[in-house]
View 1 (cartoon, helix red, strand yellow):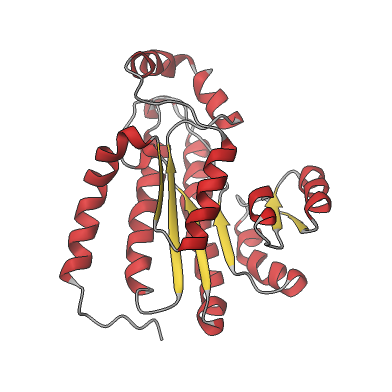
View 2: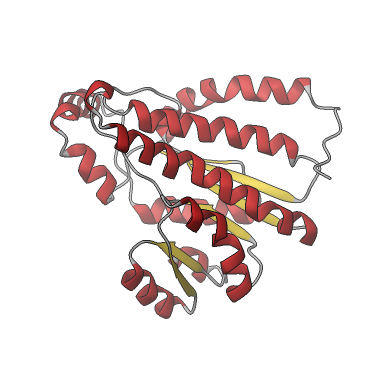
Length: 243
């Protein structure tokens, strides 16, 4: 939010933590919209509520996320449903709600926070990985649908980021051995949220499709992306008109 505001955006903030986002909105000259994105009714009405109070949305950032940290056989069913609802269903529904206005105005950008886990599978993260892989394919399909329009999409797919979510994963007993092996091989260096934010804002400004970190794992990202690019080539001359 700070990086977008510094680039000239008027930000609207959404989170369950009402006091925190109201304080940040005051700092940035934006607006706060407390909401629980696990509540379908809140998701269904969110875009309309924001646009009615703060104006048209030019950039939607689907950033809310929930981790899973247990082997699937041990993960409570309610956690499985929450992770899928927040990480996959909510971004799909919010994107569906914001696109008509963007297409009518002839501009817009939708950002999705995916993950290295959407390309590579990790034990203890089966549900989380499934949702991020789902986001990757969802965006690839929507990008084809929007190909002949001015609306753009950007997928941000980082490895570990220094946030509370990563602290939770590092603190999970079952994930400890996995992390120890990957850290020993220096495969998953932890990056700062500010670095991800700077690269995301730059990608939106320049219409880039992807933000990927760490760059040393670019081969893994591109192997995952290859089948989608093949589909794009096969459909290159097929007209795409969302109207």
